[in-house]
Structures are given as C-alpha cells and as structure tokens.
Length: 610
Image (cartoon, rainbow, N blue to C red; front, side):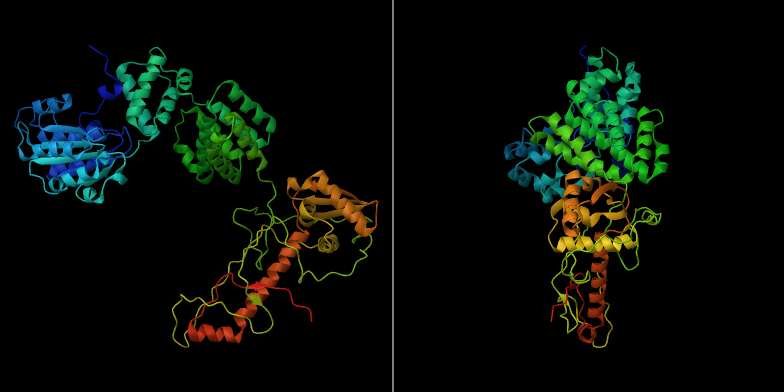
C-alpha cells in the first residue's frame, strides 16, 4: 500500500478531533443539536486551518444514519455508516466539491446548479462545497445568487475562501460566515507531539518547536514539514537537522547579538554577523528571529508576571528573561523597530549580509545614552513619564581658587537680552505654532469657525495648549550664568556654527582651572574632537586668551545655555498665552459668541525696537 502523508492520514473525522477552532466547532455543534441549520455557510481563513475538513464533517453530520441506520442529524457523526464512509472516501453522490480556482466560469456554475433541482439520491441533504470561491468571475457569482438565497430545503451550500474581501457583498449577506483562526505555535506543538507519538517517531522538543513556528499558523504546513523532517533525519527529528532543513538561524546567534548590543560591544556584533555569512544563514531570518525575541522581551518587561506562564522546558525562556532584565525597555522598543524595518532594506543592498551588518551597526549608533536628553521646561517642572525619578545632582562647585566668571568679557557690544533674542537650541523639540502675535496692544484672536455659538452670557471654556515637559529642573550656577552669556554672544556673532554651535549650547561649564575649561555634554556624539577644537579656537579669539584649553566629558548636565534658552522661551510663551486669555476683547468674544482660542495658535515675538 502506498504511503499516506501525515496531513491526509490525520485529517480530523469529526468535530472532537478538530484542533484550534473551538469557536467554530461550538457554533456548528449547537446548531446541529438544536436543528437551527442555515442554508449557506462561508468558511474563511488562511491555508491549512481546516476549511475543507469542517465542510466534510458538516456534510457527514447532515447525512449520518448512525450505526443502526436509524440516526438523524447529529453533531457527532458515527463514522461507520455508509454515508460517513463514502464522504470520507470522496465518493458520496450527494456531496459535490467544486474547485473554483479551475472552474471559475459561469458555465461551470450553471452546470452545478442544474443538479440543485434533483432531490438527494441516497443522503438526507445535497451539499455543494465550492472551494476558493473568491476565484469565481462576477458573472458566475451573479448566476448563483438566486439559488444561494432561496435553495431547496434539501440543499446546503458550503463556501470556502482564503480571501473573503474578494467575495461580493451580495454573496456574503446570504451566508453564515465563520472565520477559522491561524493556530498558535503551542497548539501546533501539542498536536505534532500526539501525531508523532502515534507514529512512534522520536523527536526532540526543540525540533518540534522549530516546526511549529515555521508552520505560521497552518496545521497542514506543520504536518507537511514534519513529513519532510522525518525523511531528512532518517526517521528521527533532531534540532540540528530540522534547523538545517528549515534554514533557520540558531537562536544562540540572536542571543549573542542582543547581548553584545546591550553591552555596546561592536566587535562581537561584527564578528557574529561575519559568522552568519560564513555559515550561509539567512540575513532575513536573523532579523526575523531577533524581532521575535525582542517582542517576548518587551512583554516580559511590561508584564513580568507573564513569564511564569511560559514553558519551563524551553531553554530559550531563561535566556530571553535574562536579556529582558539586562536591556532597558526603551532600547528594546528601539531595537525591535529597527530590526522590523531593516528587513525591508535587505533587498535594496547589493549584498544582504552587508545590509544586515549595517542594520546591526545602526542599532549601536542609535543606542540611547544613559542620560535623558533635556527638553523644554514647564511651569510645574513635571518630569516626562518613564524618566529618571531621582532629582538631578547638585552642580559641583568650581575648583578652589578658580574664579566664578569667565576671565575677561568679550570686546563686543552688549547683545540683546536672552528674553528677547535666543537662538533655538538643537535637539530641543519645540512644537510648531501658528503666526499669532502676543503684544501689549490689542492681540488678534483665532476663532474656531466650526464651534457652535453659545447663548449670550454662557461661559465658554478656553482650550489650553499643551505645555512641553522636561526630564529634570533647571539648576542655575554662577559658572552657568557666565557660560550662557558667552555662548549666546558667540552664536549672535555667528562665531560658531553647525555642530560646534550645538556643542556650545548643549554643554555645561563644570570648572575653570589654570586655563583648562571642563565642559560636560549628555550625548557622546557631541564630544567629537573636531567640534571641540573649533569651539576652543572661537573662545580664544573672542576672549583674546590663547591659553584657553577645552576638555569635554560625557555625563548628565543640569545647566546649559540650551536649557536656559528653552526656559526663557517657555516663560515668554506662558506670558503671551496669559495676555491673550485675560484680554477683555477676547473674553467678550468667548462669552458672547462662543469663540475658542485654537490651541497652539499663540506665538510670542520679540518686542520691536522704538
């Protein structure tokens, strides 16, 4: 006798053998038990989830006569009567399966519908099963509409499709629709274990996990891959042979890469990428495995108690949990996003392994710094959600004997006050606002024309614009006062530009000792030697002091020109909003006409010189 593949040999014969589709089984079982039968059913879902199987079981339930030949419609077909055996073997005369992928024209449908006028020959019901029904032409759909809507009482339609969006709404409205879900890897793993136990085939648990994941929700794919793995491994399922057959990346490479990324070890990242190239492992599979592990890490970080429900026999659980505790949650989210989008770039590069290396190096390049970047302050000094809870450290005092101000002032005219002219610092996100000026005279008002007018005298609520927040309060220091004034003069005089200007704005002057000025920046990218030397030269020229030497260190900062400028900008914004809201004309418009101030429409400007 010829060999029967596992997918056909272990096809469910009744509803109790169905796996992973309990919602469909329950609905159909209750309908059969109570006799509330619809005349047309539509089963949707991806390949290999049981659409054709459910159709055949439903046909047996409708035509089963029982062991004694006296049975009726049942949710539990006996499987031994003539009708059940004929349907299983595909020779039941009253059960017709039509493949719409190859019989999609109106002539084929008309030929099928011609049989509808004849009563069943041996069964209780005629059952027309049309597979891949979305492949039918529009004329074919139109030809079957009337019969599908009001078929004879002895006729049942069963339609199956993997793409229900292509089925006309006129057909969908005539059917009772059931969506068969893709099966979870755990469900597939459990079923494969039972099948291989029946087949007396030894299998390593990790090999079955690989097959369950590779099936991607399809039980038929899982059984087909198992057949292939049994042949590949000479009757045994071992993790190494299954991994080789599937071409999947060993999770050990993924864990090694994530551990190196957590430690910032670029050498190990590049060496591991080269090892993947030498072993011929797929770059796309590597990124896919990384996204899978990162997703589980993110879940463990967000909901730690879920880790207790994982399979303890899986050796990857412990390593995933360790990495979840090692890598910060924000870095996990960043790595997941970069890996997910990096898969789309592999086909654009001439070499997918070079693209893989670039994606991995990008993960290192965009690794968040330990210190939280400063953003605009608020009046309440509320920290951002997820920022460090501890208050900022008190600025260290300057070295004993060192002056608290810069050595000598710049020989230039005094610039405008900071409150009137402040260059926007880099890396500080300022929400874009409309051009509405807040001045001392009558300020214009932005009226929401879509808002309904309120009765005269009814109070109207003024929409408050969103106020940005900061990670830590601004802590002013004497050195910071002098450094901020000097930097703003350099920027106003255009003595520094580009990255050099950002280094000056984002840095904090920590000390001045014997001509050595120590600056601190939060971002490592701002500590480049070229930018430091340009800023040092600008200071030497501006202060006429050739002995000034700059030293740049990386660490948390509390008092920078950028923060001071942001604080001044926020204060001007607050004053402008308060001026508009307290203006009598604005209050009259709000009270009498139901006007509303559009959030974000107020923008302060510097006072014009007289």
